Each structure stands twice: as C-alpha cells, then as structure tokens.
Length: 276
Length: 290
Image (cartoon, rainbow over all chains, first blue to last red; front, side):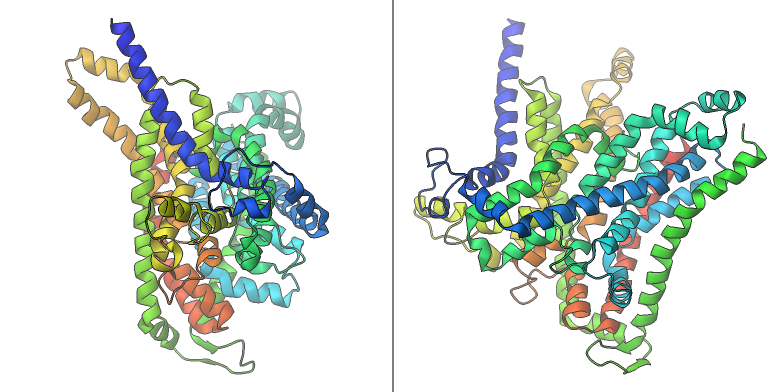
C-alpha cells in the first residue's frame, strides 16, 4: 500500500514537473516551429501547432544572404578568439595563485572579482572614445579585446578553483624529477586539469556569444556578431516572424548544445565557487 | 614547498593578468571621473571646460533620473522576486523522484542560453504583439480585447522577459544547493531527537540561504545592467516608462552625445553597483578562507 502511494506521488510530481518544464521551454519551441512555417502561417489568426505545411524555405532565404554567414563568423571569431586568448593569460595566473600563493593572493583574487562588479556603463564613454580614436569601432579585434577582459576574472576564478583541487605534491614530484616549471605546467598540470580547463573554455564561449551590451554598442555592420544582427530585426523587418525565427534558431543552436554539456560547471563558474 | 625561484616565477605569471585588468578598470574609470566634471559634448568639439559638480546636478535633477532609478529598482526587485520564488519551487520539484528528470532539467535550463536579443524579440513579436502575438490570439479566442503589453505595461513586460531568462539560473543554483545537502547530518539530527520543523529550520534553511544570497547578489549585478532587452523592445519608452539607469546613460552619452552628463551618470551607476558588490565580495571572500 505504501508503495502504491509512492507511485502515485511520483506520477503527480512528474506531471507537474513536465508541465513546468514545457511551459518554460515553450517560447523556444514556438520559435523553432514558427521557423518552419510560411510567413502567412506564422501570423495566422488561428495558429497551428504542428499541422502546417512544414517548409525549410526560411532557412534557405536566411542562408542565401551572405550577410548571415558573416555575422555568424563574427560571433565565432569573437567568442572563440576571446576565450582562447583569455586562457592564455588566465592559466599562468591561476597556476601562480593556486600553487605559489603568497599573503596577497587572496586580495588579488578579490580585486579581480571586483573588476567584474564594475557596471559597463561606468566605462562606456571612455571605451567608446578610445575605440573611436584607435579605429577599433566595428572591428572584430576590438571586440575580442573587450570580451577577453570582461571575462578574464571569471576564467581566472574558475581555473583557480579547479587547480586548487589538485594536490601540489603531484607537481612537486615532477619538479623533483627535474622538470622545469614550464614543462611542469604543460606536461603535468594541463593534462590533469583538462576537464576544468575545457569547462572554463565552454562557459566563456557561452558568455561571449551571448554578450549583448558591448557587442551592440561597439559594432555597426562589419563586425556585428549575431546578437547585434538579431537586434536589427527590432525594426519592422522583425514582423517577418518566420524569418526572424529561422535566424534566431540558427543563432542560439550552437550555444544550447554547448550549454547542455556544461550545465554542471555553469554553477561553479557563475557563482565564483560560492556554490558547488 | 615554494622556492624563491618559483615564487618569482609566480609573480611573472600573474603579472599580465593583473596589468591588463588594472588598465581595463582603472584607466577608463579615471577617464569617466574626469569627464564627469567637464562640459563636454561630442556635437560641440573644441568646447571642453571644467564645470565642477554641474553634470551631477544636471543628471540627478533630471526627471528622467528619478524615473529610471525607480524603474531600475522595480526591474531588479521584480525579477529577483519571480526568479527566487519560482526557482525555489522548481528546484524542490526537480529534486523529487520524477520520470525523465534530466530532460526536464534541460527544458528548464534552456532559456538561460538564449541570447538576450533573441529572447526579447521572440517575446515582443511572437507573444506580446497586440495583433499577431500568441497572447493576442489567446485573448481574442477568450472573447477579450487584445492587450498591448509593451506600450501599456512596458516595464512589467520587460520584467517578464528578463525573469524568463534568469529563472533557470536561480533554479539551477538552488537545485545544486538542495542536492548538496548533507543527508547524514539530517539523519544525525533526527536521531538526536530534532523534529521535522527543527531540522528544516536549523539545517535546510541555513544551507539554502547561502545559495539564495548568492543568487540575489549575482543576479543583481547583472540586472542593474539590463540593456539589450530594453533596446530591442521599447527603446526605454513610452516616455521614460521603461528606461533604466543603464539605458539612460547610454542614451545621454551616445544618442545625445553629452559625454559629461553621461559620465556623471556612469559614476552614479558604479556607486550603486558597489553597494551590492561589497556584500557579494564579502560572502565570496569568506568562502575563500575555507
């Protein structure tokens, strides 16, 4: 009897959870469905959920425009470029703080965190003017620099929390065997910390791909990544729902996939290790 | 054991990161402070002079400041309320033995990965549009007048959109916290004679309160800077009905080209964010000592 009660409880909770889950996911689902409709069906007064003439026409239209590919490419360059550049700077820094800490290490970490607290509007004007004067406005290079710097504290923190879990004896043993510090990092630390480094990289790609303050302000047409390209649909052009949906679906698909793989690490990265 | 040479190397390894972040933070911030005391408009090149606190006075006495301060407060509090309450409920629900938990988890988490411009436009056009939106169709089919969300309740609509984006974050963090609850500790308390209420109050609540604090502080940092969602839906309007401080500073600096006033606003935003940041840093700092 107790078992049947447990079963009933499980069924009720499952139905409830699935209802909530589908409700939260619904806007994304609706967007994906709309991307396969014709423009006429997309604005029909009695919108059809599944029984419409499925068409991939919108995707053909979007992809036929070379514009889309160039924005997609900009997103790839900016998010991947800034994440790799960030790793290059963050790995040595996190190594130093995790394995040769001194009495100021904690203050340095906290100070790095504090740069993340600075609201972007606090430096909006100077950054804009500096970019204007150095011809960095609407360039991929400029955005790679900005993205690297705004995500650097998160990268260092994440790597630091991963590195700290590695016993320093492992590294010392390598040093006893005559390894230099450089080869110690490359041949001992990196292989052990690879999962941590990979998830740091993934989280950064997600953050950079979706960043929508600097990308909107510092780009126009040439270097605009997908965030800015989609924003251009806020004009009446956006009333072409099916095309908007197709462009949006393509824009979020890569990150949805990466995100599902790194959901566990997300917690650690976004809370700076406060919740694990 | 850190040798002298490795300690030296440590300093070398960390210096690029420190130098870059220092330049990124201090130089522009110093420039913003400097500009905030200047009469400087990009439309009037050549005219640039020290004017003391005038920009601050101008920025704070502008009715738009009060409106956008209010809006920022409502936006942050509204989204925090919805995401914490909803997030806790979802986290508790997902902690139960349910069929297909991993799939539900993925469904709930998905909005967090949608870029802000996409989620804002999908909600604006496909749900909230008074003619073709899904809500309009729903209202009409129920025999009601379609409601024009973004012009009649612009701020509430933006709160809804932003809450949808941040609900997964709160749910995920709280779920992680619930799952890391030490079951042995609970059982030990039970053996020692603690009733269910005492166990909840002395073990579960303190454990969750830490995660809730983390969610509140981290979300606040991001919510103070909500920008894209406003830019693509309402442009801060009608009037200043959905302008927050971030958007106000953007429009003063880059649409009105008033560098001085925009900078003064920027400094005020920095001060506001710092009030939150101090609490967040203290909490994370405590964690570091463990």
